[in-house]
Every structure is written in C-alpha cells, then in structure tokens.
Length: 159
Image (cartoon, rainbow, N blue to C red; front, side, top):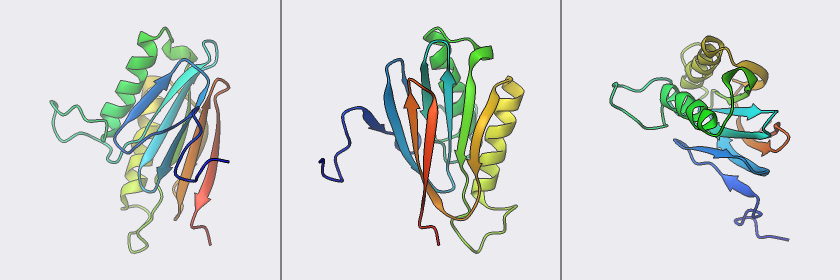
C-alpha cells in the first residue's frame, strides 16, 4: 500500500490553474471548492483532458494563465484538437463551483459564476455536457479516468 502522500503511477494530480491532456489511460485527479474543472473526452480516440480554473474570465486579452475559465477551456480544446480530436466528438463533464464560504449568497458566490461560465462556454462551443456535479456547499475530490471517460467524485467535509 502506498503512503497517502504518494499517488499511484497512473494518477496525476492537477493543481489549480493547470490543465492536463492524455492519449494514454490514466487518472487525472484534483480537489475543487469554488473552482471548476471541465473534463473533455473523445470516445473514438479514447483520450481526454481536464482543466482546473479559479475565475471565469481573464482580466485582459494578453493574459494566458489557465487560472481563468476562458483560457482554460480554449486551451483544453486546442490541445485535444492538435492530437486529432474533432469538436463534434467531445463530451464534457463539469464539476465544482461550491459555495464554501457560508456567508455568500448562492447567486453572488464565486463558484456560481465559475459554473455558469463553464456551462455557457461549452454550450456556445457545441460541446455536449454528459454529466455534472455543481454548486452545493462542500468541496469535491474529482477523478477523471482517461481511457473510458468516466468520472468519480467524493464530497469533502459533507455533513
């Protein structure tokens, strides 16, 4: 058994503000609070990727950080297209956007804006959302299994 701080060799941890794409079977893992992750999967090529963004839009047009949803979503799609995917084949799974600060109203908390942005962006891009687990008041641990496109979520700090 591996120590808790060491992940199996086929599990890759995705930090906030990053994205990962793989053509090989593996698991991408991240921890989400108000942040949102979008997992994109191409079932024909059996490849996919995940991002983890903290804010919906970049503050300026020359910002390239994947901390922003507009950059993280475009970057994820771009990388998959470069690897041979086609936009019409991509399926999305969307997670996160929790209201982890209890004093924020549901409509004004950061997670709500992140979730709404991701869903709107995907709809505008014509990418079908096959599953989602959004909002709520607790964080999540997300695992995205490249190779079969399945996701699994564990709620953190659930009461």
